[in-house]
Image (cartoon, rainbow, N blue to C red; front, side, top):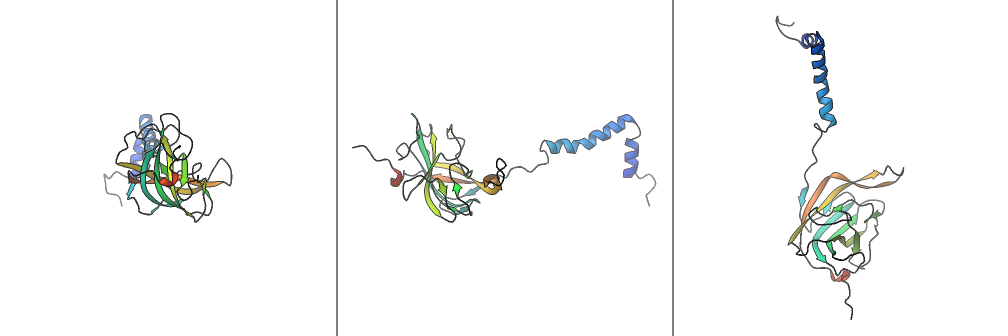
Length: 211
């Protein structure tokens, strides 16, 4: 039983619908959640990157990664540098956790260079070299582990800082809409930041000096 003088929800709605101005007010009140939701006001904010340490295994989805250190050099034994450019490389161990090969420099969105490093081409690696053979790693095979140097071209880092933060995106095996039935690893909103110490260019990929 409703107490005398109590305002029920039904009473409030009847009151609001009693005149046209009140109906307009009610319509606006009902639209507020729709508008706010449409502009993302009720959406979840992207989680901040989680900090991980060098030389620790990190599960990124596509890979198990052991990030080690970074280097800056124009003496890497590969092609692609223009005048005034140098390579910034991240040395890491990667293991393909999936059941399909991963095109490391084409469809991979795991490793991201920080925005503070000038890079006109892509935030993702331009080249990936194997440290055991010195050759390019075009595809990481399922279940195999590689020691690699992830390479980006840059016009910056003339004076390389003692540390550089690399982002590793958490990826998800998902269907690529451009081609039906084609799956690939795509970055999610989750990511990891690893602060890499400055190291030396690995000898295995050092360009031989001309005699």
